Image (cartoon, rainbow, N blue to C red; front, side):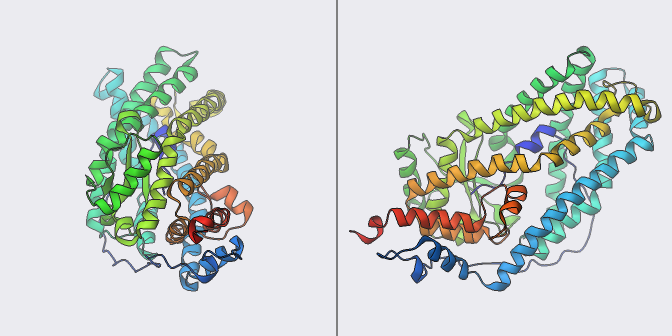
Length: 440
């Protein structure tokens, strides 16, 4: 089942990555059962009870694994806060020490051609913020992942991937920066309207090219040729009017132990992909359940709906930026040596304001994604007819997601339904379709 697809990140295009050297620690094992083990309470019978079946599945998870995944996921709540505060500090540092203005001045000395000037500024900004954010990045994305047994890379290959991401961000971020600052300079009164339009189009462009041109930079994507796996998946696809001729595999095990699959791109670049961890550890029933979920995203047009939703968010963000930038520049623009909204030195302020906006609407963004994931869950159950495979997939996802959160906790922090709710949905579906399993 897909992790978050990354569309909100593409919207801002303000990624920061880093480089350094350190000693790597070997990843700890963090595996849960990888075969279908249907507990007695979850087996089809005239007295089948969805709640009892759900509790029986949850009882299969060892207590130490539950504590481990809860600690990892709850620690992520704090990481959201620390990421936000760390970003705020960096933005204020660049503004109050006038580093941003100095980078602007250096860019102007390099060239008077505005697009190149903007790109030179972006290059400086990206390198400097990458260095400043390095301590948090290396802890969060490397040491913490290894601590909880979710990473497989040693430090050298991890740094290699970070450098690749830095290169992608340099190109895509630089392109977006040149486009947006060009809009602001030429359309000073309506820049926020046209800036939103450009950002939305850039978002669509990024989603379109990602499966074919970006994902292969980091992982090898190949067609899956195992008939035992592919044939049931393609049969489900044909039954639901999905014009899929191939199923793709990605070698995610070179980076992580997580099992996942995703639907990415749209139109002719749409791909349904499962990672090699799922192939290695998942049962055929689990794989079919997961891929039925992915087909739900396609049939219910979730990519297009996500783009429309993010388009609305983008417009609201630019309305907010128009007001907040004017207000902030009137108060501190002279102190920060920022001449206008069209001055590249304004970028840290833009990042700061967007970070505040994104932090505040986190529950809204999570709820939007979580709703689509639940819809895809229901589609996947009806398509694959593998409720026990679906329950097993939820248990595997519980290696890094809290299985049994409170309702408010789930609303704020979860971009997927919780493990308990997903297993209960599968067992409820099974309860309503018992004759499929009893033969009566």
